[in-house]
Image (cartoon, rainbow, N blue to C red; front, side, top):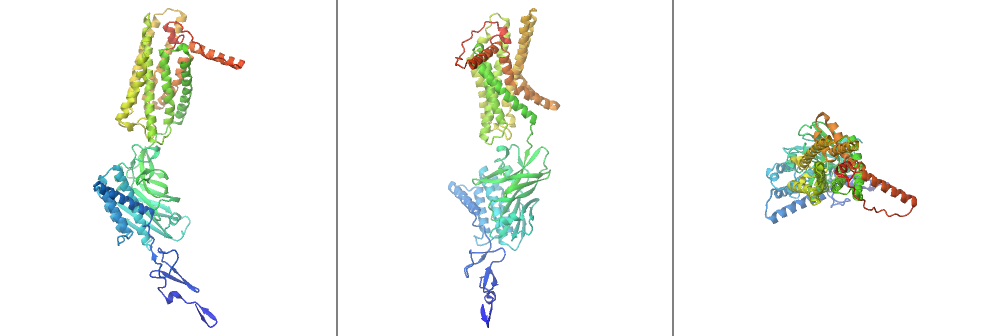
Length: 638
């Protein structure tokens, strides 16, 4: 500015010295001074403008933590290969990837365009030797580096050409579209749609500008035409999946796509981004579409459903809404069978009631000395196994996030339920021997039923079955839906086989018992009291049909039109097995009822007199009633 007479006239420094701001910079004249600025899409090299020092440069992401992390992974893998003396295909892949990234970011003297970078990655992706060799962990690391590298390269090359708003590159294996946004969004509801192959990504303008790199917002969308087959072939989809474990029989049914913003850092989006993916095969009615993203953990990756939800699906497409941008795909899984809510209520109520009855029965068998014998020991062991198995069954109905814990619960259930059936078999055998020897005067078969053989078989046989099953196929314990036995390769027959055999044997014992009783009843006279006892004996024999586990055969009849009826019958009858045991062996036993009366009477006396009593019970002499009365509950219980 200089004085002219009495007035001051501004001097335009930009016209006087066109290079005052440096090469490529823009000079804006102001009153008494000037301002330097960079063209759109470029930024000053220093925080504030310094004459003859500051230059304009294109925003770069070659100093980002993601890029440094990829370089470190590539170098570490190369060093490992050199130390081991092996030149693996994965090692070659890391070296090639690092060369491309260096070229993209200009460290090799030449800068690749988006098209050049995409074609370079396309060549790597088409290298069959890379994906055919190496173990699962190495291939997983290669996939992780590839996905991250293509995202960074797409963003870097897009930022290098700020004059081009949209770029599209399509090759044999990779398709890329980038979008640049400068300044504020023109419309509050503006949504950008990026397309690659047959897939789309919808992202809001505010989301792009919110992740802007030094004022320039960049978005990239990449679709891979062959990566899904590579991942499926290497079974890399087994990882962090729904149901807190691996999802059986799931498969990728879409291309793998990637979305990236700004400088490629994973960010939580202010508004979700939507991915519309085309199915490789038409979705079946019994299949469920699951949206998953590639989650990187410890330089490796696996599919995770966290943050991605399927908002719409039909036979050909699925739309995924994701709270973060990463690599996304669609998994197809068998539809989870929706269990009947009333049936679930019946199960929980029945088992809870049975647990209470089993607890009372266990206390009765332990404390009631007048009924202690071999038969009572059998009842007690069966009650203990059921009392431990039923809570595990209820626990297994819920989702257990730990695969190890789920497998342990499944193995424990396998053992305890097999133990239950083993003790049911021993009860059936003991009942048969007892009834068969009603014909003889000197009844001794029950005494021959030695405990030294009973306990090793009752607990040893199921342990042997579980040990063999775990040795043959340890991964058969625990499924994606429940902590139970796998349905693959017939593993469930390690439980169904022994159970069916025991049910058939017990049904045979039951039929023989009824035949013997029929002959016994036909030889009786019309004595009313004796006839009463034998009618009770018949009732208890029929009750054994439930107590010996024969009703579990209803579970094999859940097919056809009557499947629902059989399911309810099976659930009701077997969830109340503990209640049946308490009813038949405790409430219908005269000696047990008398013992209950003594306990109640003593409790009332204790409450009335408010003084301490010695509640220890003296031994009650065992009555010498005949064996027939013992079967109907009028003497020592079976």
